Image 1 (cartoon, one colour):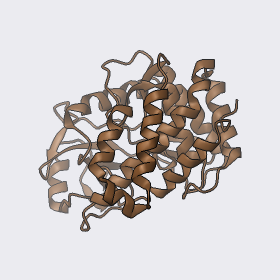
Image 2 (tube, helix red, strand yellow):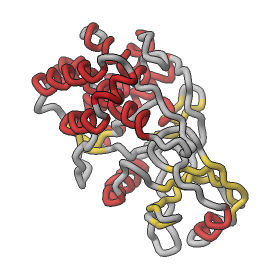
Image 3 (cartoon, helix red, strand yellow):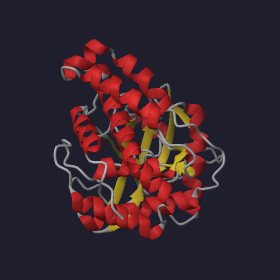
Image 4 (cartoon, one colour):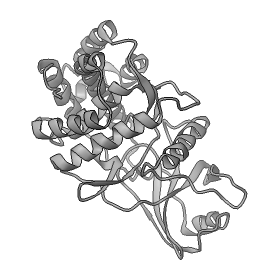
Length: 319
């Protein structure tokens, strides 16, 4: 979450009149994240998240995202649906951007998860996959393997090497490896594809919310496990692998939805792909984020460290 587009309180107050949500009490920009503009909205009735879609989110994909949230909520999973206005519409326009008003969920995202929290996150991910095996429509992963060479090219060799000397060559070599070894014929479902700790709300060891589905797509469930493993099982800078979190995350997932032998065998390659994907998107944002944006840039080196770990530790995954 972040703020790229600034919206005056008066505009938000007028926007809320389309809904049965009370009147505006306060609106506060949320600086965390890098993708969309987000405001925490408090009204006389409740709390909400106002999201204005920027950058990588194509408004034409919103029916996929919002329909997925509606389906997951009906399946009993703790996800935040988009609020419908008085005419039953979820997708709006505000300040020249496509926008939605999202239900606020209780809980906090944890900075330093415990094994118990990692286990609960794994269980929640497994339940989501099980609930969406037959979800229609389908959406191609536009941040998947086919996009990474283009993204590296968009960053530019010179700019990548300003982040770390030799980074462009590291990325090029890894891309060649992954293109040759990427698995096929694994189970697919609708996946989250971005399940970092800050996208999971918790009270103690209980998951109270899974949020930010704007990279969700149809892809390998095992790839989603690999993304989540890379997100949860390292120190923030990626320099320290936390085996206890890995064991708990994998146990939580496997208990709720068994990982098949071919999926387990593919995890080391998928994890390298997950690390490269976030290395590339963080590098791109590091290079291109405008200085006036109210947004916290995230260090791409944290995922270069993860990539190096996965390259050298194919046995990191256990069940």
